[in-house]
Image 1 (cartoon, rainbow, N blue to C red):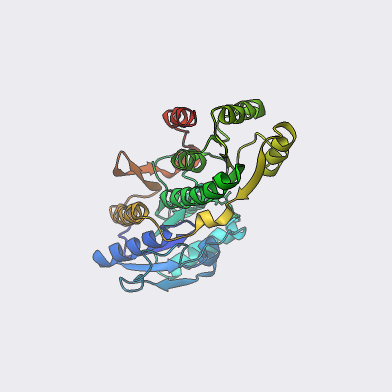
Image 2: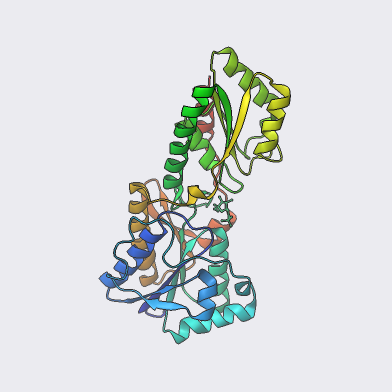
Length: 328
Ligand code: F6P
C-alpha cells in the first residue's frame, strides 16, 4: 500500500518556459484544496540537494498566473548526476517530511526524477515544461503556444521592414533539435520557406524556392530556420551562400534567441498549466508515480515517464504539406 501523501514538493528544472508559474500556482492551490501541504523547491535539483525549500499555500502563488519565467528559478545540477547528490536530495526531502515530488521541465529533468524514484522509491510526477514541444506523450508542452505567438509577432514585425526594402530575411528560431516552433510559426507568419532538422531540404531546394518566389513576383521573402537545422552550419552561413549565389537578393539575418522563452503565458498555456497541476497532484494522491501528465486529444492523460523521456514527437506531415502549398 503506497504511503499516504501529506506534503508535496514542486520544482522547475531545465530551460524555463511561459506557463511554469501557472503550473506552480495550480500545484499549490490543488494541494490547498485537498488540505495537504506544499513546498516550493528553489533552483531545481541544486536546491533539492541543499534543501532550499519554502512552504507554499494558496496565497503564496497569487499574482504569478500571468508571469513568464519561474518564481522557483531553474538550475542545471551536475551534483544530482551523482549518487551522493541524489542521496542528499532524498535526505532533504525526507527531513522536510515531503512525500511526493512534481517536476516541471523537459526530458532531462524527468530523467532525474526517474532515477530518484528508482533509487529511493520516491513518488514523482512530471509536468512537461519547455517551449520546444519535443516531449512524447503530450500534444502541447507548457510554453510552446506562447513561444509560437512570440515568434509570429516577431515575423510580422520583420516582414514590415523586409517588404519596405525588398529584402530576404533568415530568421532563426529555437527548438533545440526539433522543428515544431519553426514549422508552426512559419505557417502562421507566412514564411516563404521553413528549414527544419526533420526535413533535409538541401541548399539546391532553397535556391529553387527563392527563385520561384522571385519569379512569382515576391519582392521580399522570409525564411524560418530552426536552430537545429543542419542545411548549413548556421543561419549566417546561409546568408553568405545566398549572397554568393543569388546576387539580386539583399539578405539580412535575425536570431530571435531567448526572447522566445519569455513573456506572459498565453490563455492556452495558462489553462493547460492549471489542468496539468491538478492532474499531477491528484495522481500522486491516488498513489501513482513515474508518470508525466500530458494533453492527448484534448484530455489530461498520464504517460509513463520512461516513454516520455525516450519518445520523440514527430513532425506533423500534414502541416509540412500545408507549409509547401502556402508558400507557392
Ligand atoms: O529547451 C529550450 C531551449 O530554449 C531550446 O530551444 C534552446 O536550444 C535551449 O533551451 C537554450 O538553452 P540555454 O537557455 O541553456 O541557452
